[in-house]
Length: 407
Image (cartoon, rainbow, N blue to C red):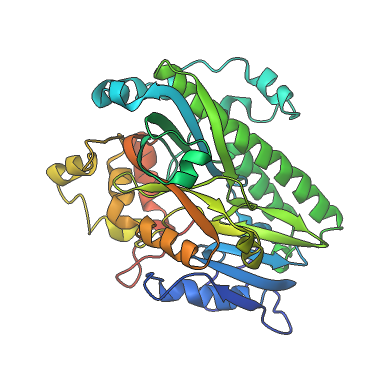
């Protein structure tokens, strides 16, 4: 299936002329040189027409993450195995003034034990086969995925006009297609010998991948809704969807396809969340007509500044420091029983989401509606054997003193 990008040789069929790369970030935003090198390589992929790069840009396995890329060909490697991963924001019928954070954290710890109904019926309701990974529905997954209880920190007049409530509590859910997307990716890799060159959209392989892709995107959206439903049940609340925005997918655009690789796929006028970290603000923005210049993409979050491997030397060096990582300046609590993940997902691993949003606003891609502070962040715990197995993987080891993020 080819080599990872940045390994010294491009795995993709080179284009005759490199595609244009448009940077939608300022000089104030920290961008790793390896990510810029990957952009250059991506501009030579077969069929690529243009690339939009956002301020959360960082290195990835098969190309830089934080990118919208228009191509005549389909590149499943760019979308990866978490097809349909995205951010969904929900409003709860709970008020901030009645919240007791410790009690909410205690209830949310049991989030994935909450009943969600018959998975087969839920799949059928959204037009998906009832056999499509029903046991995985309503689960968050590991890594940077989460379910977070939030409160409004600042609310602009345009945010209030858009229906955001400064006194309400909200849930922000980040998850994707779980085992389903992984199975699709594995099958695509094993059945396409020349996947590195991309797929022709009208070919048998291209049509098969697109059909599987579309099912994954729909499944991932349902998954986020069910995670939120479980959280709301744990908190004994009702909820209402505010925004559902995927950031790992492809969308048809005329006769071409735009690949959103860690970039939120938006249209003007909709609401879109941009996640910070568990110890920094998140934002809700409204994309402007200007997103036509960025292929309909914006940042979906702050983006990593440091890879997972190197974070083990930067934060959480002892038990006391790790315990501090589970609290934030607003009295917020992080629920995570995986010690490695606590360190790898520390706030210092991420860029400044405020600067990311400022860059997007400076490029006239978005209008900022509100900022949100994290109160309770639920991250999936894994058992120690699974965590150790993950840490032993080569992609999580440091190379040359500094590893590269691989996902």
